[in-house]
Amino acid sequence: MSLTSDGLLTVDAPASEPGCDVQPRTITETVTITWRATHTGDGVYSAGRTETSGTLHLIVTWTIAQDRSESVTDRQGDQCWTGCSTIS
Image (tube, rainbow, N blue to C red; front, side, top):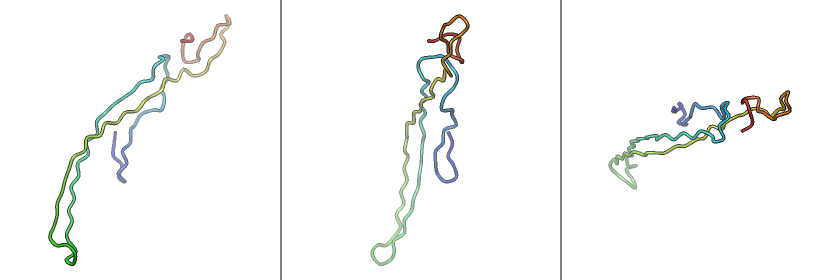
């Protein structure tokens, strides 16, 4: 995962990957975001300076699908996936 210059969190992962497994692959990571802010009063309605900070732990989960490619008929008349040896 990475944070872009405009503040977006991106995951460098494919939408799918070749494979014959029935179940897609699920990945979970924790993102920790810390911040700090200050505010100075406008002198008319508020005065002084306020500081605050905090931490957010965000759990992010994404799924990578299994791509078996296309279903085709082999020379023996059996169905198989182009990305696998047999239909599963």
